[in-house]
Length: 336
Image (tube, rainbow, N blue to C red; front, side):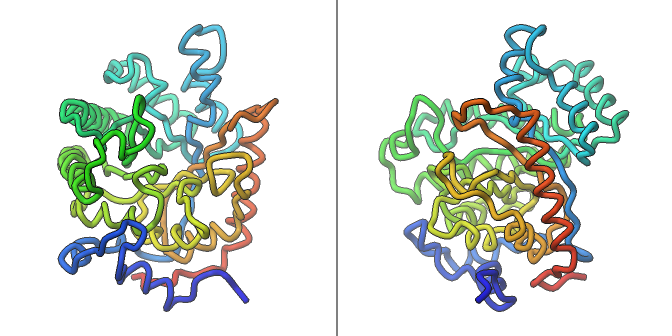
């Protein structure tokens, strides 16, 4: 028996969202009406992209010593060599982060990508909106707003925002001082809404990434987006960070609301996690009617001998095979 969703079950999870059981409280009728799946025209259209974080160690090495590792220009060269359609240029690796880079640098990098035939599918920064410290949250809001403007200059349509805690905290409960979940979600929603309003001014969508911690399930992801209730704030689905017995069910639930992705090698955060069933995953993405970028991200996860130059092409080949093998899959939701 197929484990993939039927049209009826897909629509039930995507449109009705009767109870955010994983979040521990119901999604209200008012909130449920506020969020709708992204409107699509035509069938699914998937474009390959690479998240620069896949070169984490080499980019960090280059930041310390320009004679070592790789820089963002070389990441773009790599993407062109392997015929990616786009590249996701993570903010951490720009000179001067978390401050905005000089316009001259941004436009040089943008032109370099253009000359290579690459689109820039997104960028991202770190933020902690779960902390009880209002000054830390305010700093994160300002950082996101600053990088919304960077994204606009680059031509990136989406900027990633986290919904989890950051060091020195180990989890959102510790960061919030054990505040009730609903109260913390309200903090998150207020901050994300402000960022989304700024994104609206510059044509950049704030993509909220599930990253474990505060968002472990599809229901929790959608509950937060319902509370934000802003057209310029949507889901960015990290396929390795729904920490549930069946992460594919969570992926299917949130896929209709996705504006970008991070496709991981495993459906968990360690080498012991199951390998991603790429064909099953791409089928779910196609069934949602998604049209846009599907960035991949490889991680060393403390593997001995990990080599970005080896692992990325391997994962890209798997993704391309899955895209080709699922070409006949049609959306389970109505399309225009």
